[in-house]
Length: 406
Length: 156
Image (cartoon, rainbow over all chains, first blue to last red; front, side, top):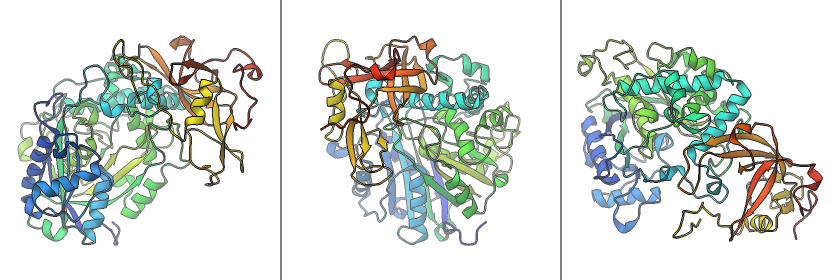
């Protein structure tokens, strides 16, 4: 580990996920967010009097008739909490966590809550609203998010061969089998799944089939970050941030997804891992942002787990499974656990739970931290010390990442 | 973005911006326009404020060939919304001038689409604007699209 770790003073001390479900439309996004804030603070052994920063992505339920932009929401929270907030995020998910970590490390904030509440996601007759940006060059074509990923996936298979498609099927099957084993997942108990199941499922946008795509669901979640000194008397094992990075190469969905838009799209990750003093060999568990199975393959390449064009074979070899080298998306991911409109925080939350050994699955002693590591029951990674976590980038790979450690 | 009220749902109709208006005036006239840098000659798509190579406000609208090849495509079975009848084909076209353009493919069966196939623009006037589909290329580049100005001609 690097001696000058910029985040050495920062700890993740609380996490919470509410019920995740295909339909929680009897509750507002704010209601789910509020439950998540209370839950994450209780998990940490803290309360709202500790909080002086909030990063918020809540779909609706706000006063003033205003839901967006996200940048207003911290001021709404300040009014709700009757206390000024000293830190205002510029984003959400991992970029906001890195931003918050910098603020905490430098004394601009002491305790930050990141929260998401998503509800009433499902229109009756169309794809989820967030998949349909109303861009003048995109919407009329019939494109939406799955199509954008399909275009990148089709080109990937064209360039690197049919093992790409087989790898996408294997990725989806592995992730959905983890979700099958997670009682808290939207699709708990629906598996297990094979690659053949995935390829045989209903086509959505070729080459992507239904089981390669995210669920559309409702739910809330929250994370609490604080200073190392304050973390000493919190309830749970504090989790460290060893490093991270962010790369956003072009406006996704406004521009067509063309592979290798950035000539060396993995440079930011190599540099970030080097700063953190981490090699891939040190990583025990991977929580990729699995918007679509194709994106999982591209992230293995972007983040240097394998070479360009090699991810199909890499995944087919079983690396993602519990008994593989890099168990990946161990809660069921966006494909099966939940995609509540903004699932960015679910990835670090699952990493925290794996690092704490706090994983709910089919093992009889899971609540005592006792796991069988039998892949037909268990989704807990044995003695996980270091987790690699990502959030979304464009359909061609990249985005943001963090390395977390216990 | 507007949709037609009443009747069967209409596909989303693009709303031109001040930046993109010359492009949409072109499609209405049956020509595909791109921005080209007067300094380096590079082409831009989508419409930009400045040349992405020179970072100067040196772009002017020119008439493109309307030709290209399929970079990638997807046969869509789950439609974006009720205005779209599946299966339909969304594609990225590598234009002859270089930029990649998102569009859809018409006049071709989904199972016959291949990456690399030659395509040409096909306009559809939908009232407020004309959409720019692509279809399999039918003839040599010099004759298509009908009425198009030679490549690189400047739009006043």
